[in-house]
Length: 139
Image 1: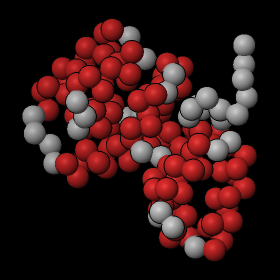
Image 2 (image 1 turned 180 degrees about the vertical axis):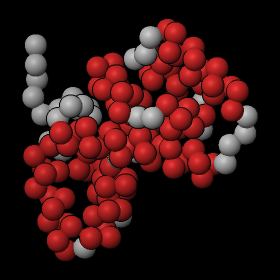
Image 3 (image 1 turned 120 degrees about the horizontal axis):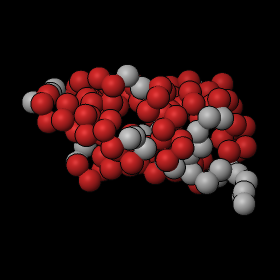
């Protein structure tokens, strides 16, 4: 009723087991709808809240050119979660590269962000990173 965004919000707020049961059923009924919901479930903004360990795993999977292009398209304060997971030297190098790049087409930035999202989704499927708190509490 509310569209893919509403469905994505509901699934994101549910336990992982719900996603694993519901998404394949939606894909069986309507592949395009399932794709639209997945695109709403995983946005670049979701990467901002990854813990340092998960962010580090993601950054190791992403090409530095893609990282620079992806970060070029967001505000400086939103880049900090990415820089926190790097050494100070690496973060300074990425900052310098972002500043040296000059203007970029928004399409290039979006493509780089999609590449990062794809890597994050793959790592999440493999259990390497976790979006949100996960299903279980750990101490």
